[in-house]
Image 1 (spheres, one colour):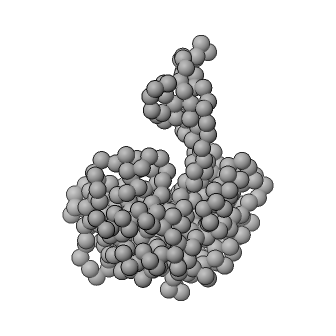
Image 2 (image 1 turned 60 degrees about the vertical axis):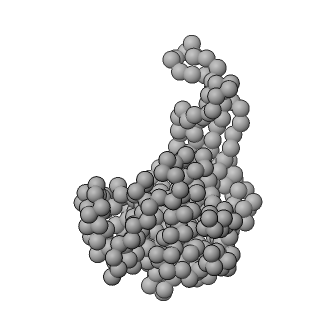
Length: 322
């Protein structure tokens, strides 16, 4: 509880792919005569912060002073993300260039008149291929400037190009200067040697090490190999319904069971909540194990919420007080 009081003083920089989660809600009317598909009558749209933007939103909801570094296109979704950042009090260092589009995931949710809306289709949009070299260099410069003022750096890598050789070099430099760097990378964890904390889930750990992760013993063996390979201080392995395990160099593994009900309502963005909470706690002076415990509770709260969601500092405080 004492650590939560320090959260508003913690300066967090979030690097990663700023995603617009675009929800289109509608009502199913009938089968089309043109093709065997449902016709959906549009009702409303909603845009939420996704990807690294959701990690930034979670850090901000918990009280942190947050700066998001990434790419946004000069398009409708880019403007929507900027508006959401401004409304939530998140500073944004976004690079834009001709031909660069905002990463977006449009989910079409529809149902009958008196039924709940269910996802029918998802359409992903964004730039294809590596970002232009000028954009990558601009990202590295903005990250370098922001990281100089940071108490902790979060890397939220969804594979859309913001996390590249240029920005990884700045991340490693920050870690070498003693700034805690917490990394959540879906596709390229092997590229993050020398950072402070890495947070793989079981499939990502298996991909990194080439080892099985079915049993506790197998996960322990794979985690030991990952710690050796990455050279990080801590590996935080999330295991879904089995909770998470903290592997700190020189210490025995600590297993944390799922906090709250095992059956999640929606796991969308739960990893963002976990890494944001963990990083804030570390920035506030918590030990790695203490930070993991707080992150585990926050993760247990957010999976009980539908869609892309955040956990606030008062919510976390109430749950800890139980």
